[in-house]
Length: 314
Image 1: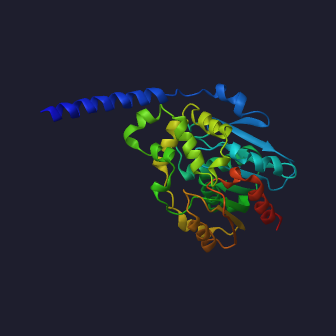
Image 2 (image 1 turned 180 degrees about the vertical axis):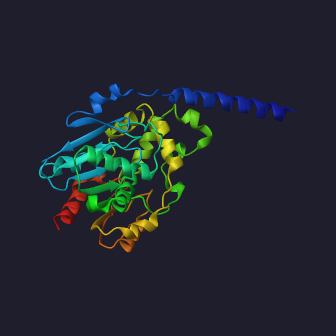
Image 3 (image 1 turned 60 degrees about the horizontal axis):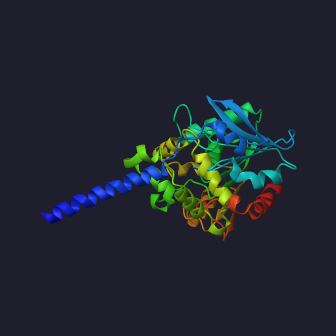
């Protein structure tokens, strides 16, 4: 019976190690006030909408007839567009914001993170800003929000830029470690209360084509903003409610000129999805970015913006 004792003691030791790991990575939520000073300097503002204080940056000339609206992806924030917004705002009105459930905007009071909820939220945001017709630019989840909004309200959208966009079915195994952890329901109670910084760093490096471009400041930004009160639970709920690829048949309805930008080192949305969009879209231009990953606008804002400028100028 010695082997039973050995197994018993091994299980006890494993339990202590697991408890120690949870204790070491236990991180309380951060209140909004703790984060605003660092992550919402001017020109950031907060707009009350749908029971939330939505983090918005609205810059550039107000007489622009078709402002450019930038929509980030899952577990990200408007900061991913800083390179684009800084450049574009010299001549264009540019609007970026934190989606419900992410960044400084924080969780939706209704806990609704379906694409339909996001598209209607976006239209209400544009109404609140007094904007009628826009150019929509979206990355990953933001890309699907952009094209589904175009399907829902085509009269509001003049052009589309889709960057490594969601839209077609994909494997859950392609998700970075942090997202796979978020999808594991068996340990949600623990996962909502821990956030190993090493996992955040690994996840951010995993969505870059060149991991060496990931700076400590970028890791700290993703880490800090995902600690915003309610964001960890919101991420899990978004993953529960996601139906990626479910509405792909709607893409064929889009008539607007569309630029599809794709970082070919994307390990989440595979590069073979890029031509699917141009197969289904009526007016489409595809530009591959061979050295970039899942968030190319953040990894190389100069190269990605050059491609976008050429498209928008036509």
